[in-house]
Amino acid sequence: MTDQTFLTREGLKKLEEELEHLRTVRRAQVAERLHNAQEDGELIENAEYEDAKNEQAFVEGRILTLEAMLSNAVIIKDYERARAAATAADAARATGDDRPLLGLPLTINAVIRFFRQTSSSTS
Image (cartoon, rainbow, N blue to C red; front, side, top):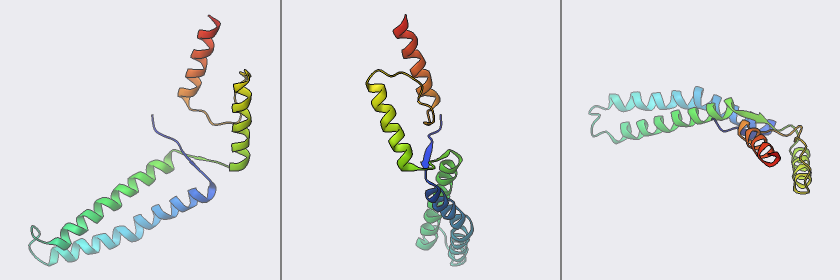
C-alpha cells in the first residue's frame, strides 16, 4: 500500500514547481556537467565526473520521490476546519459515539479495522 501525502494547495504547487525545475533545469545542468567531465579525459580518476554522477543520482531520486508523493496526494482544502472536524470526531468517539467519520479521509486499513472491531464487539 502506498502512503498518502496530505498537502495544502500551496504545498502541492510548491512540489509541482520543484518537480518541474528538476526535470527541466537541473537535469540539463547535470547532463552538461557530465558531458564536460567526460571530455576532461580519464573517467576512473575524474573527481568532477564522480561528483556529477552523484548529483545525477540525487536529482533522479528526488524526482522519483516527488512523483510518488504527487501521485498519492490528498488535498486538504481547509486545514483548520479539517483539523477542528477531526478533533471533534475524535472527542465524540472517545465518549462512545461510533458513527462513521463522514468527511474525514480514511485509509482502507482503517475502515477494515473499524469493521473488524465492530463485528468482534457485537459477537
